[in-house]
Image 1: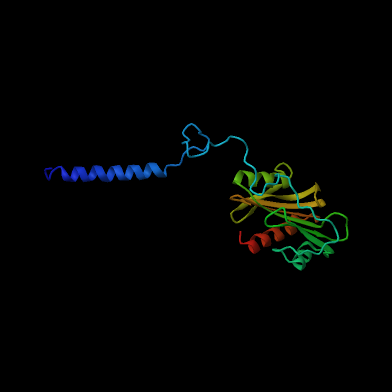
Image 2 (image 1 turned 45 degrees about the vertical axis):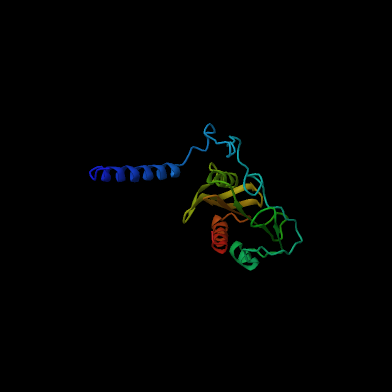
Length: 197
C-alpha cells in the first residue's frame, strides 16, 4: 500500500470504530418491540407494577396497642414534631422500608409515614398525587424532591395535613392529624435525611 493511502486507511478504521461504539451506546426505544432479538424478551406495553408489588394507593396498616419502633424515625421526635404524645406505634413490613404508624389518644393515627421504592418517577408521582391530590394541595419542594402539601379532610389520619414528595423512583409521604403541614414536612425531611435519600 502506498504511504499516501495509509493515513486514509487509518482514518477509516478509526471512524468505523467510533461509529460502531456510538451505535452500541445509542438508546433504543423501549416501546418498539419490532427490533427485539430472539435472545431478548419482547417488551410489553402493559403497565409496570410498582417494585414493592403494592398498589399505588396502598397504606400502611398497623392497629392500636403495638410498640414496634419505626426503624428510621425516633418516636420522641415524632411526638415533639407533631405536638402530641405517642401512645402506640408500629410498622407495616409490606413496605420496604416499613411503613410507620403512630397513635395518640384519638382512634385514628396521629401520623402515618410511607416510603415507596417504585419502578419509575412516573409511578412515584402517582403515589404523591394519590396522597396529595393536585387540585386540593399546594406545591411542595425539598431539594430535588417535588410534590404537594396541604390541609385535607378524609385522609388516613382523619382531618389533618399531608406532605408528599418524589425524586427519581422514590416517594415519601407523611400524613398528620395536625392541620399545619409544616409538621408533616418536618417529619418527611427527617425521614429523607435518616434514610439517606
